Length: 538
Picture 1 (cartoon, rainbow, N blue to C red):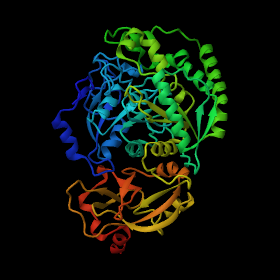
Picture 2: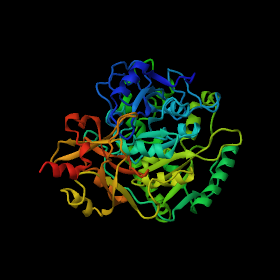
Picture 3: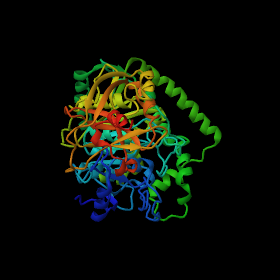
Picture 4: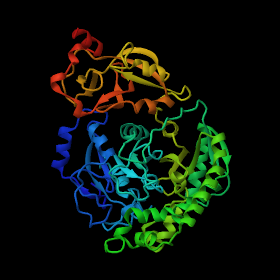
């Protein structure tokens, strides 16, 4: 275990074992995860790194509940920059975290503990948040992948707000594939979250064009050398164009120099006047910032609109923009000497992402000359999440989840969407085409699930479970990638989409059922598939 203050509340071993004992056989079965302590886990206080917040959460955040339903097992609530206000990982009364690669260098924040938990091997993945870069900066400083979804793609119900209009729940993992698996589970609208939305995903182009900045980025020398190696790597992988990123960088300055500071006041300003546990730097940034009028706010909105318009030509000529995650990797001593100035420099390449409605994924670039990790990131307009993950997978030497260029994704259907079944017409109307008949790996089971019409619910047996001698028959269909999000929004709980294994060893996106939809008395696995069971009922 790590000897640094990774966790604010580490779950006892018996509690973790209890979660594991009841975890359903979903797409994330048995995977451990850590939760940034501004995200609710039922029965545990959500402190946001404020010790005076001691009331246990009445229910889990939507994202946490989706992970539990998918079989993942929580291990604890992680340390963070208080009220998610910081990119350094030192603004916490529970102690400052450091990079797992150096006790002298910051871990990055605000999701400091989440990054350390994954990098130190204390969790398979972690939930974080990213309003200004808080999911990407600590990922970069700890050699991880940080997935920052499009705004609203992942609901924030049950998350302590920092800037509600900009907040994003993010994923930290050691591989792009793991980050994608988790995103598949937690994405999707929530009617309780007014900021959530459904986004159709763009296809990965056959020949991606990636933009890189022209001119000097004012990086530290060791960062600069790693960045030069990064751009060389990009030219090996993709067609590269050089672009002016001035408008992006100016937009970044608006986050703490505009009305969004007032939105932080709206979120948690009530604690600033009478809570002695509030970090002094957090208090200075939020409570002692300039008072802004409505005129000031609209002036900032208009300036942002102008900057947004200035960035659009980049997207007409490129599919993604490659940037460093930060310009430097500061030491704990440097942050203590200038907490605001260092933090501002860390947000230079991340603060604008949500203001400009972009998605992003951070991942390891070439290691710096001093042995510390160097993080790069790809950005794209909202709805480019899956395409960015494909590009990041290529960079990291991983297999993209779907072939680049054809713009389609394979989908395993097991019941009402089978050819000739009631919902197949919807699949065809969205551009779906039949690929082949297949069988699932033998350790899946099928149950009848209630709903507007009869449906099968498929779950996977836990390790060691007794498999059926005859695997379940299913169909593989091909669906345009841009239609996937809209199709997923039509799927009613307890069903959802996740990665399923077929008996030929391939792994394909398909229908799975959460544990609350499983009734052992309605197990129909022995029939070998939905059509066979339907035939047996006359």
